[in-house]
Length: 363
Image (cartoon, one colour):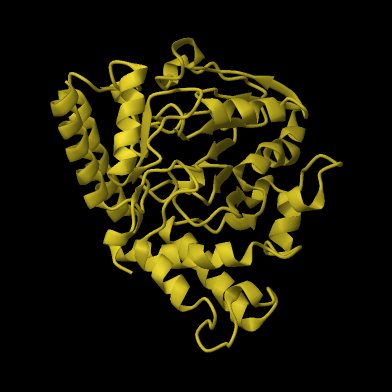
């Protein structure tokens, strides 16, 4: 299939996958490497699938430089189920936790955690409609929190934490759903990292959870087995049937990531892609970015024109031109271009040209 047959899909998630990954998955759909079966049909206990699983896990460990102190888990329910799993597993230490509120998903995570303990909000950007990220000095930590939770990248509002919060030894928990594998991460600094797959890793269906093993095994007594980090560690994520096909596609994406220079190479590419679009916004009299410059996301570029009517016209004409899913989230309005790892440079350049042409015609 030619890439010209495909649109530029700027969806915030599920998002586009690398074309070589889709082509390989298609070629292996009915007969995976001589097995006579699709990966969709395999027993998760079979040797052929265990090899897929183990290689995917090993590649992820290598690319993210996950230390031996941490375990990689493949869990179901997406990142949203981790909103429950995190407090169930960790809040029991003191019955309290800190949640930084910088967007929709951190707010949802906090509201879920309130079911299981006392929640403190050490910082929030709600006062300015989540257009910025609080500084370290703005964070008012609790001395007795079991953990500190934050969302690294805010897909709806287009902001991203540019630093790792200092918590004075309180375990750090991070939702990295929308920027995992886009830049190096010091995993050892975190108690838990979790991420839904459907933005930078694979189709929807699996959440990658990276857990400091020292924190596992202390879950609340009513924690469901499938949400227990210790149970999942002990069973190597196979207490029940995992999301087999999604994990397989994740493995293909990780191999593709190696061809891009790994996480370090991807950081350079994503920084360049984001700069192209932000330069258009900074030079424009029609378009303006929604997030403050110092907090701009490299993954989700949020912007608007001079009127809602013009926003609607832009989205309509962009769709006709082959740029899909540019309409902003319903709570934020405007436009949003999600430029995850799989979005090719030519897609970003083409969108930048389209924005300039639209302004020239309508300005």
